[in-house]
Image 1 (spheres, one colour):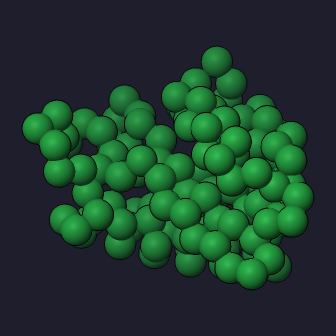
Image 2 (spheres, rainbow, N blue to C red):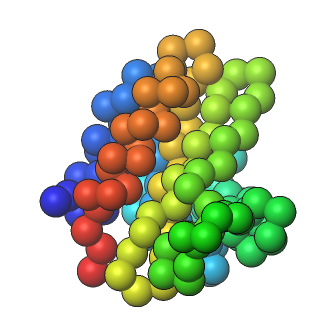
Length: 131
């Protein structure tokens, strides 16, 4: 079971990965970073990504609407934002405490594979050990 640093290094092995971070969406703080930052600064990128994650997680229009939804699990699995040159994949991590962290992967659109990245980031999030 990988910790934060190993998990982020695994994310950087994905084709087209430009940068990765583990972010607390309640505070906007980066708990770990590797590679480049989309805004040129990991802390700024973490704070901006946290705003988007918080919006998705706290508003009912985006949260789980099935009978199995509960407070123990993040209400959203992931958020994908695309622009002309890259993808941003925010994958919520299910933790034993408050599930307020997510993995942020910045992926080159020309070199990356969004479907593969989504699958692998989900696997990484399941194995991630925090604490």
